[in-house]
Image 1: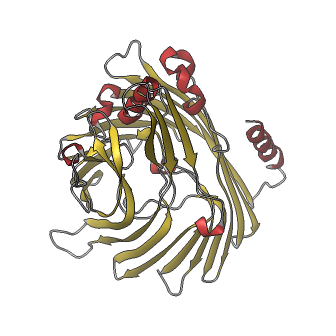
Image 2: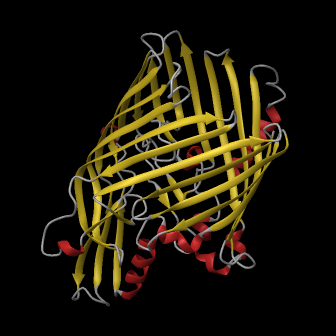
Image 3: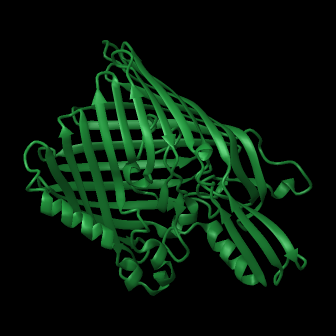
Length: 459
């Protein structure tokens, strides 16, 4: 916190000295409030206050530019709601150096573009689904409800780009930094069902010695990635490759003493596994006259080699082990604007596992867990999303509804309305409604459906 105050003070103090075309300062103040839909009068789940500042300084016109972005937030709901007290240190405020969102130096000359520093890289065309967008880890303390720009955890890296010809680019990433993806801690609104069951199991044992091993800070443990992007006519496409550590750890549990029931002692080791992504994406807008004119088609394809997957009993959220499989995920989407302002977007995709479930004497209990939420997953998970949005009142009022789910059925319905009170003051009201089985990714939050609001002042 002291470092944040110091840097903010320096930005504000020195901004007049840099005034003009070379230095710009921007930011916003924001309040986010949410209430559980089942008990609006008593169950506050979030009262989050956010400040963000971003500064850009052109050291040498557009050729050499320094940019930094800082964000600090505090969620007072963890003070006001007794049941969240134990989760306050992990989810009630910014952790460690997470307040520094971006801090990088851009060099842009001729066919070369170089970005060095803390940053995030977005890959792919999928809307709200991480098929190729896996360069950065994710902050899932609020599930997948935040914008992807806020979900991604920035990393220190070298982002090297070369454009050999018009509309093409070769990107090479070297990422020596490592951060794990985070999920909601215990006693927070979006704690996973598996985490709650794990804590209940841990308390019933005589002792659980848990150790977590992060990748050693060596250059060979860096993440390496590249992307080739190009355009042929009105078709944009990419080829992608990434080799790095999976951002979510996997548990190995060993019985030390006892019979395996209550009052036994255990050794739990959390480790990170290396895997690879081979992928591609495309985007094509149809401009020629005909029934498809005005449509934009897009898609992502990812082949995950040696992806670490939990299997076990989803009813009791107990893992029986880990398999490293070669899995596939793909998604196709179509977008079109009709009646001038009504935008429609639909997607269909599949997450296809190499095997339906592990073999062995306990195979009947061994189902697959979702890699992020640890809810149950089918051997072929069919994924659907649909979004519709339109503007009113000279585009100051925007209405939007998003539905996402699978064929289990389980999913989320999220309508919202945003209104510009002024050019720099935005009010948003909305609902997140979850449905499905307690064992599913969305269904485990069916008691956490919420009505929310936000007020954002930009400057």
